[in-house]
Image 1: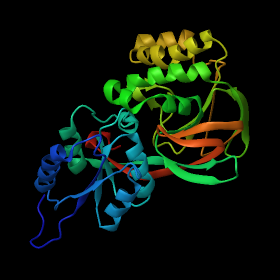
Image 2 (image 1 turned 45 degrees about the vertical axis):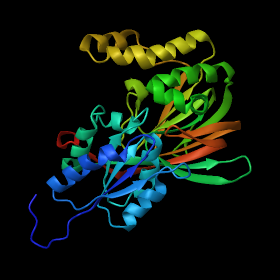
Image 3 (image 1 turned 180 degrees about the vertical axis):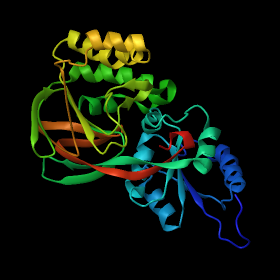
Image 4 (image 1 turned 135 degrees about the horizontal axis):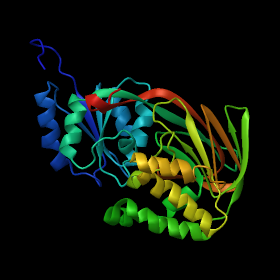
Length: 331
């Protein structure tokens, strides 16, 4: 990249979780790529136990960063996205967490940090949707937060509570299996009223209600086949197993059929005898979603627990976040 003599060099910022990634390792890789592509010195901003990235992202914007590299897990990505959405400043994902769910849904390479940093400086921005959630508390208080992957009420939040940080560090996404077994043992169904676009209503007795902005889960498990990160809609799933066989059917839908659909023969088998019409799985879509529940249940956004709630209202902000991706994935 050639710049005119004396031209001001653009500045990138790195918002990083020091528990997930070591700056000593990242620094030379980032600075080398920045120099190679005509960028100036990089601004480095740590997250902390009290702030998972929002304050760092605000600082990056205030100091004129034109690119923000996010080096952390899904919680760090969510916090940065909340601040950067609609700013026009692209973010680049340096996967470092257990799930890396947004990166998976964008089909980004996860194995190599150097590759991810190169994409940050050489890729093109892709506009993706951002969810905006208003979490309702039992005392009438409202907490407003963004999400890029999903918002959930019930069992999925219980799983997050039951999964230890140490387990995730040692075993990765498989640690969630242990957390799920603990949570399922104590999970009880709750009545929920789900309204899409203020007109289509669905009533369920569910273990969990998920408001999804994309379809892929950790472990490359496809939960919502039709969901897309940039379609301008939210997909809602109410999951209501009653007995063990229902859980097995759900597992087959998520795990087995996803693997089958990778081949034409497998797709035909799924069409003939698939579980896409599970009675324990209710689905709807909308640009705005309102969920009310009969009792307080835990709430999560992008894998982080946000206390207990009696409902939430979610709306989509289409194309609000720009994410750097390889040129062949930009469209």
